[in-house]
Length: 456
Figure 1 (cartoon, rainbow, N blue to C red):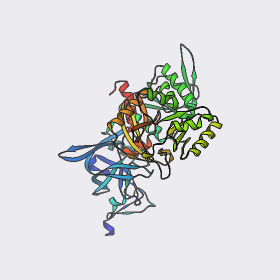
Figure 2 (cartoon, helix red, strand yellow):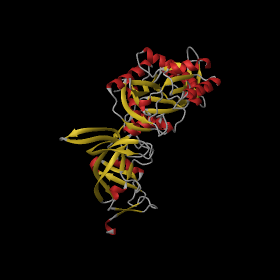
Figure 3 (cartoon, rainbow, N blue to C red):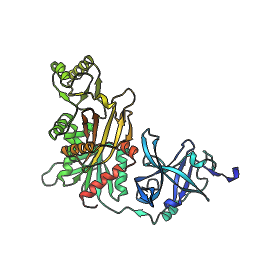
Figure 4 (cartoon, one colour):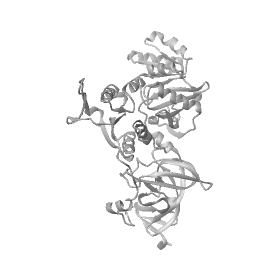
């Protein structure tokens, strides 16, 4: 039987004839049970009374301008735990794989693998009985030259030229920033990463300017996407205002970002717009501690630093004595704090709705680690798909509108009183929600810019 098996190295090039993919590099991984293929814009549909799924793929690593539109019969939809720890619902398809001269049917899941090193992962179920792997070797079946790849994909769709878009942020290696850059380039736009700390301004009534490292003047931008971390809000928003003065379209305005970062002011804005929040107290004197605790219904309660982010500076005080200690400790540091009722029935879960241009484009449920009450992904929380109610969608859209944010991550908690709004984030992360939903959220952000310029 040995002579009938295909011998593979740890990396190989394979083809999927029925999907129109002439060659794609795969990681051969016998440690993984299921095979997976990179896919974006995944959408199920009915074809000849059967369930199918369509999706797009950029088959060549580090080439996001070459796009293949694929469709295949839908076999299943399963919960898969990715290598990054996210639980995600994945569509499962069946199609023929071709390795060398041999072809056979395999099942594989569809998922966004932009953060991975390979567009394709070949798992052991697809190899069982047919393949032998020599992990010390690579490309046992050969590999195409760059010229051959260009020839193979010469008829594939190419993204057209478009806008000049700047991503105003701090870390080019952050998942969210990489995805936004890739999504813009994929849709044919000229993307530039602008490091906030390397920008400086000329304030002038007639010729305002923004300069970049080395004295380069940043002009002729069509749009700017501000992704400003909380620690640099003041300067990042000053730069965003300067771009606005230059008549550049910004995806979130400086005013909207600034007010969203002020937790107290943002809660007051939301309440003024008729959006329910957990009962919240604010005080500036330790003498008010006892009444402050009573105001929100007593212990257990949540104490939040106004300047905290990603779950930092948030404490659960389970008893009145603990609450008094935490509040007085924060007050002794002259820290501004909010005291908020604890929604026990939420059981460590909240809902993140991602709102873009007045629509909820995706939603996930975030669940805290055992023994933890904060569901933030950065703190080890897990993300999974959830079907949000019409009321929850309405709250999310209303909250983004109240804050005047075109892009917002709106956090909602389910309580016995109904859905309550926790927070509105002006620079929501993409990794958790893209990983869990398989949706191209970065692409939706670029579409919002295109819509402003009437390109779609």
